[in-house]
View 1 (spheres, helix red, strand yellow):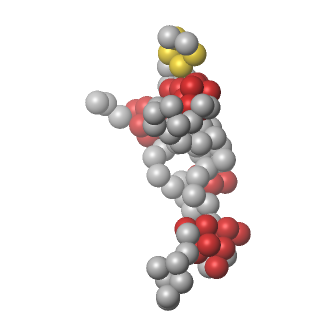
View 2 (view 1 turned 180 degrees about the horizontal axis):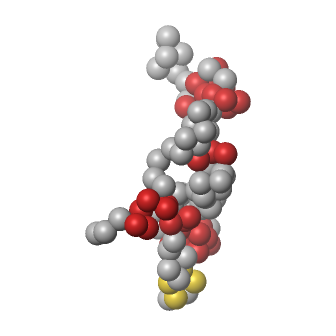
Amino acid sequence: MYRGENLLLADLQTKFRQDQTSRTGNPAIPAAPQLVPRNDSENPEWRKIETAWRETELHQTGSTLTPLHFEDFIPATDNPLSKASDGKPVGLEQEKLQSARL
């Protein structure tokens, strides 16, 4: 409820122009096209959705998993979305993490 109006998130984003000025994800990082719904026979597309999610998010094809890499979580530092307006990197920097000892 916003000022007496029952609005959905999409309505608020449009009302405040967030649909034109905000990013809620990074196009440089692959993501599943939709969340996986629960498997309760209500959605006949469930298996197809879940398979796409496993392939994109887990790098799993059938029973085979391929390794995940830094770029699967954090965009490359040469990506404009990885830098603040002053040009400094935002978030984790791969180069610094590689030299860190765990």
